[in-house]
Image (cartoon, rainbow, N blue to C red; front, side, top):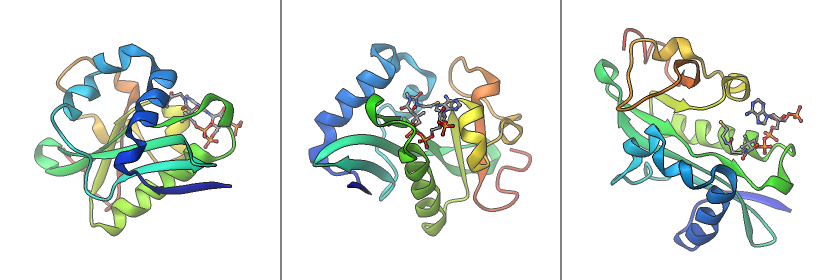
Length: 155
Ligand SMILES: CC(C)(COP(=O)(O)OP(=O)(O)OC[C@H]1O[C@@H](n2cnc3c(N)ncnc32)[C@H](O)[C@@H]1OP(=O)(O)O)[C@@H](O)C(=O)NCCC(=O)NCCS
């Protein structure tokens, strides 16, 4: 049985191995990594998918500031073990993260990722048109989601 739960410190070694497998060593050079460096996940917003005591999925949300829109969250990285994909684990992790962030009163989530995957949750590049990241980014992959309507308007 697959269980989704809050990430725990004991998950850390398996999480690093999973992310290495999903993204390779170049994951540390990504622009989003600059935003996450020296930061910690937003309280209560780091999640793990566990099957038979093995970590098979991970997702975190991070606190960031989005220019005039103020505080928001950065989603990522999202990774699911290669032999466990297309079972809805990624979908469940993202849905759980969005719901938890909304419950905690957050206003908006940003990410850099594949629009064809994240569009199903409502993420869209139109929300980030006025925003920049501290490094190169493919604008078509720079996506936002308003948890509160208008939260990213004019940002
Ligand atoms: C992206 C990822 C997290 C999805 O996890 P998952 O548990 O397989 O996701 P789900 O089961 O919710 O959804 C699977 C569906 O999404 C589709 N999908 C997966 N990655 C996709 C992508 N990058 N773009 C568009 N669709 C994608 C799959 O084809 C699948 O479609 P199907 O249901 O018609 O078979 C997983 O493929 C992964 O870890 N990939 C490598 C790391 C990565 O790229 N992460 C970030 C994505 S930007």
